[in-house]
Length: 143
Image 1 (cartoon, rainbow, N blue to C red):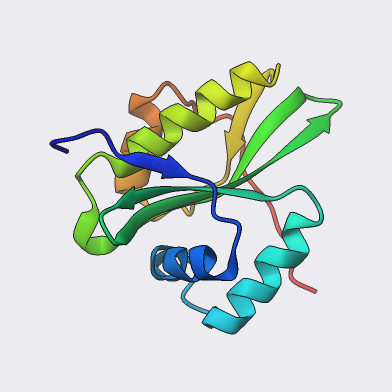
Image 2 (image 1 turned 45 degrees about the vertical axis):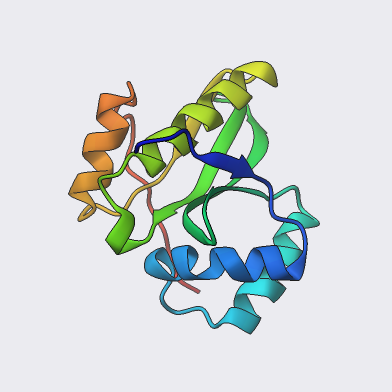
């Protein structure tokens, strides 16, 4: 990236809609309307979004929340970290990840956690390069 990206926390519907194309890359099952409704519900539970603004476009965004666990203490959990396919490899995800780690430190967290699909090898390279370790398997049971 030639210049430092501008990060922002979208709050209005218009700002969230600007983030939707990036989220759609990671969550293709969502419609724009369902995305807005889901984000608003999750925000009531502490979910937050931080995004990269590059001109008129939002090429990358992350959804996160704070949680406490008996196993790990206070954690910043990254629900979503996504970049438009055309903007991958430009450092946007790394900038967001660096910001998230710094924010977690500022908030007194013990760790940053995330889950990543086993097939997302490029994302795994980023996480490993940023010092993350593969520490567990995530198990799920659909109901």
